[in-house]
Image (tube, rainbow, N blue to C red; front, side):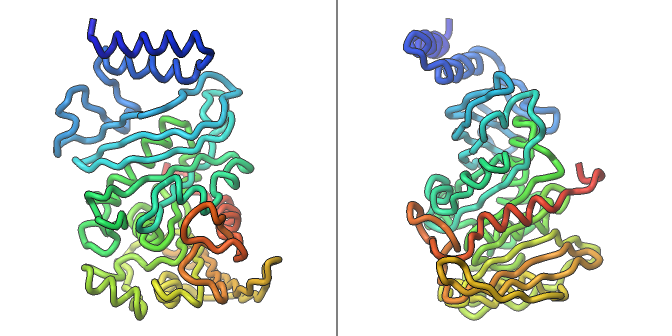
Amino acid sequence: MNPLFAGLMKEAAHLTRNGRLADATAAIQRALRQGTDLQPASPDVPVLSSPAADVIDIEARVVDVETAKPTGPHTAEQWTKGSFTHQGRTVDYKLFVPAGGASQSAMPRPLIVMLHGCTQDPEDFAAGTRMNEHARECGALVLYPEQAQRANGQKCWNWFKSQHQQRGRGEPAVLAALTLDIAVRYQADRSRIYVAGLSAGGAMAHVLGNCYPDIFAAVGVHSGLPHRAANDMMSALSAMRAGASAPLPDPGSVSPPVIVFHGDADTTVHASNGIAILAGAQPCEAIEGRTPGGTRYTRTLYAASPGRGDAEHWRVHGLGHAWSGGSTQGSYTAPHGVDASGEMIRFFLTHRLGPLAQ
């Protein structure tokens, strides 16, 4: 018997005797994966069954580090971590699954992909945005990919490099593949997949939305920049400091619905970048308001047009480079601002992909 297999089974027996059934199940599943060839997670996501799965010519590989697989209609809430490889690029992630959200008998759930900002990680971003709390209320899955420090010293998504701004290449490709893998394995509603992010994560969210409008039904950008705002570090710093010129869309391209939040006191990413994301869209209504905490905002609505979904732009007055309405338990948050997480989910759930995109 494989020593690792035997050790994992022994661990499972110990956990069972101590009443830790979910952990025991996870240990058994790890043992089975070690004792047998890995099988594909779905027909759409091929998986190799040998150590060669880590080399650059692989298609995709999933490794659950800790997991509790669905066992029935009353599956407990889960906060799991895992690792995913696609085209030789590996990304770790955390996944929030609300109670009942992973069971075979449950209705398909929405899936929200959350991309953290520089120096952040999934735990910090989840705590700061409170997105899991909002997702718990509406039954959504929330996926938090983590940028590796080996890919960027500050753990920023590389939104400003040309190889990471295209469909089928670089970070957009692995993030899209990870999203689809999670959607298949956790029976998410393929018509209700969304992506949002902060700062560099917001910029990458806009990249994903524009590169994969057949996957993401809507996009949320907080304190970010538009797709193709830069092509190297120098142009990125210029766009962040002074604002990006609106890039021309490709002929026949599709821009998904987008909700934008930006503080007008942001000294890290100039507030004009939020407007640049909506270049070419036609505003139809502007609403002035104030939060219970006293923060003023201007909410501008944009109508859908050919090749472009409808949009909202929230200009939060006095807000710096921080997630509006977030929690002090995370970094880069402004608790008294507009509840960006709640408004994003409200906006997201009004949009679905058409049947041809599924």
